[in-house]
Each structure stands twice: as structure tokens, then as C-alpha cells.
Amino acid sequence: MSQFLSNCSADALATAAQSLMEGSLVAFPTETVYGLGADATNALAVARIYEVKGRPADHPVIVHIADLKYLEQWISDIPEYAIALAREFWPGPMTLVLQRSKLAKDFLTGGQNTVGIRIPDNSLALGLLEAFHKLGGTGVAAPSANRFGQVSPTTAEAVQEELGEFLADTDLVLDAGPSEIGLESTIIDCTGQLPRILRPGAITIAMIEEVTRLKVSKLFENESDEFMQVDTRVSGSLENHYAPKAKVFLDEKPVDGSGLIAFESVYTPDGVIRLAAPKSVEEFAQVLYSALREGDNQNLDSIYIAQPTGDGLAIAIRDRLSRSAKGR
Ligand code: TXA
Ligand code: MG
Image 1 (cartoon, rainbow, N blue to C red):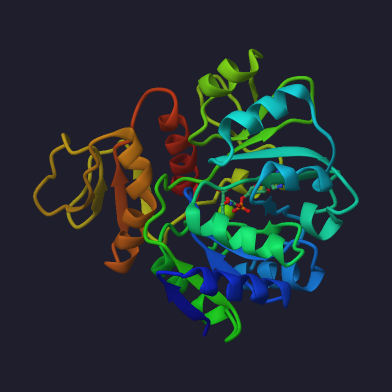
Image 2 (cartoon, rainbow, N blue to C red; image 1 turned 135 degrees about the vertical axis):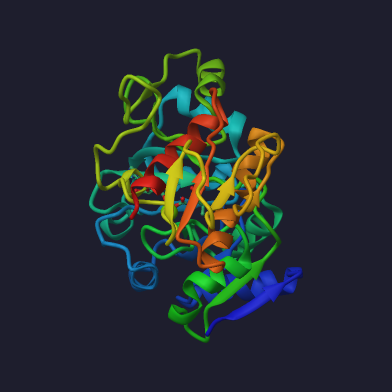
């Protein structure tokens, strides 16, 4: 069982950074979801992430850094448009996939020649990363802190529920309350002439196009706006991801005894258990994963979700939900 730390002081963050240096795992909050961190240059520590998550070894992990000045050592090349994106949206819910340097080893990148990098926008995460850099650390590898294929955790309690039994006494879970955004970062492949979205998120196509003045392409695209599975190495692109234990139904009439997640304006039929009633798309994203978890904690067989329509963040929500619904 790991240690659980709330209200982290600077001293506690320095201790957590030291634990990372020594090869332990530290789960930490970000504005998107909670991550399970390890020293990104330590093969054994990163191997433990895979073990604790039960994740296949060929899936790349994102490297988290505290500031743009730590970017250069991880990459061998960066196009102008990616620099513009980094300046505009970091710290923030965006991961850039760039050509890797020698520092980004195969055990991080799943053998690909690229590396995913992100500066998270959360004061505790940034404090931890700064403390880690101060000790000479170059970056923290961190996937979402859930078992492979499950729903990402948006609270420290959810991390504990997911991974507690797999973590060691020397590992830590840092608590800073619920994640603000609640959906994983937008992943943008910046290795081509044009930016390409690998996973939609809170940094939307319109935002990227405005900053880069370039046309954004989507890797997983059919005639609608759904992002389809193409490359299994982008683990978030696996069809059965983000899946609770309950069966998920989208835009269907809820049956007796099932759970319901829908905008506040949608009425709850008799006998249906309301799991969330968000008032906006932002709130929908923020509460979605905890509502799915709540459905599982109540042992519901099925959860019905009335999806938000429209562009922007709603695309990211529908992307995750279409995979949740294929889960079981
Ligand atoms: O919001 C987030 O991105 C959270 C927080 C903790 O930062 N992290 C996260 O990590 O969602 P993870 O590992 O659960 O999902 C990262 C996705 C995976 O689907 C992985 O395959 C993809 O990023 N990825 C990482 N590096 C990549 C690369 N070099 N090329 C393509 N995809 C990559
Ligand atoms: Mg994940």
C-alpha cells in the first residue's frame, strides 16, 4: 500500500521528487486526469508503471516537464507551428508528439522515433516537476493512473481505488482534489508538415488552427467526427478504452435500475439512478469519469449517457464515450 499525501507542502513535494529520483512511483494530479509518474530516464521505474497499470510494453508514455526550457533535451527537431502551440497552450491540456532525442529511450516511446511531451497546468504537478528538475531530473513519465483499459482517475481516491493494491509502500499518491478538466490532454502529432490530432481534448481543432494558421488533420476520422482506431500503439485509440464495468449505452432511453448521465435539462425517468446532471459541456467533461466510477461503485449493470452535441470539447467527450460503449 502506498502513502497518501493531501495538502502537500513544498517539503512534501521535495520528498516526492526525491522518491521519483530513487525509482519509486508518484501518482500526482494534473488539470486533465491523475497521472502515475516515474523518472522518465529510469528503465526499471518506467517498467513498474507498466506492471502497476497492467499495460502492454509497446505503448508509449508521455513525458511531463515543468517548463519549456526542459523541452530541448528530449527532442531532436521541432517545427515552427509546434513552437507556436507550446508557447500558446503550455502549461495546459496538450501533448505534443515530436522527433525524439537520444534521451527518449525505447522503453518510453514503445520503440517509436517520437516522444510525447506535456507541461501540465496544475500547481501541485508543476511544484513536483520543478522539485524533480532541481534534483537533476529531466522529466517525469506519466500515463493516466488507471489499470489498462479502465476509466482515468480524476481524484486521488480514484487512483487509490484503481492502483492501491498494486503500489509499493515506497510509492506515493498526491492529492489536490478533483481534476479541473476531467478528460485527457489533446495529443497532436507534430512530426509532419501539418499538425495532426491523435486524441481530441480540451485544446480543440479551432484553437489549434487559430494559433498555427494551418489546416489540422485528424488521424482517426470517418465521415462523422468520430476518431476511429487505426494505430494500437496510441493506447487511447484502442476501441475498448475508458470502459467502466457497467455496460454503457449512448443516446438510448434508460431502463429501470440503470444509471443516467445527461445534461441537467434532461429528465430522470422513475426507477433510474441519476449519476450526473452537468450544466455545461465543460462540467460534463469534468464529472464524466467520476460519474462512471460511481455507477460501478453502485454495482449498476448499465449506464445510459445522453451525449453532448456540437464541436470543441464535445468531440473529445464523444470520442471517449464511443470507446466506453464498445468496452464490454
Ligand atoms: O492528460 C493526459 O495526457 C494524461 C495526464 C496524466 O498527463 N496522460 C495520459 O497518458 O493520458 P496515457 O498514457 O494514459 O495516454 C497517453 C496517450 C497514449 O494513448 C499513448 O499511446 C500516446 O499518448 N502517446 C504517447 N507518446 C506517444 C508518441 N510518441 N506517439 C504517439 N502516441 C503517443
Ligand atoms: Mg490512459
